[in-house]
Length: 306
Image (cartoon, rainbow, N blue to C red; front, side, top):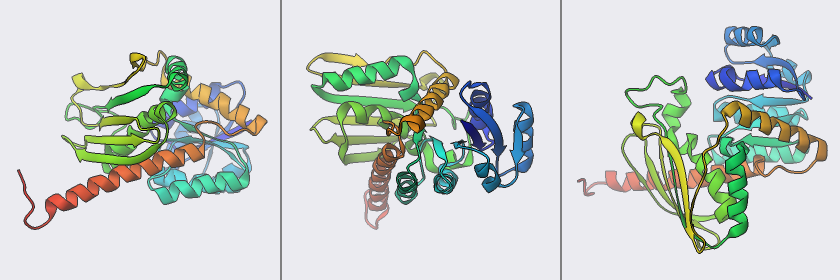
């Protein structure tokens, strides 16, 4: 499969380009980016071509991998699907429900394959654990924590990008937590509560369709010593915890690329396709709306401010 890369940022340079170049089932045709010089440099490092016209790249490929901010990704994903190109997308699919719906609709109408790279879902041990817990059932509650130090004062992370600064942990690491919770506990019926914590930290309580509740704690401003991800389930079978990945992001993206190839070949929707990406975006937007509602109440005249 001929594939192109849209994006030249840190994720594109550290993970996407090396994986696309090394993958035996892919012909890495070229790179397009919003910064032409960065596209040239990335293409030179990986022995491929830099494109200054995204439509020219789309004309030369069968699929695209996207490593762009979510609002930019959504617009270009719709364009690529309209051109009949399969999609290896990043999370979140879009920065709004409207954008995610447009992506899902474009994929469905064009009948192209789509895979959204929720990293944990493509790691061997977590993936097996998710399937096992979904089959087991009987869960009573769950707690997920995804704590990053991207914007901590001691951090010099290359991922401290403008869109993460604007959208925060909810939209950056929230999709990872939801990508695990939804297949195990079922769809979210409603967001029962949401509140801000220190920095960009967000706490949320989710009511799942089968009556199970879950809580989320998400942050990109945690102290480095506190950073990390964990998810615990409690139910009739006892207590179980999401295992560590045991693989790096490149291994996970390689598996995602494998599964895009399979989905394109077989025509079967992938569990992490654009439709699932839309559902995750809808839940994120519901949490954000509840946070905004709480902020408005606190800011109202006469509101209590402790």
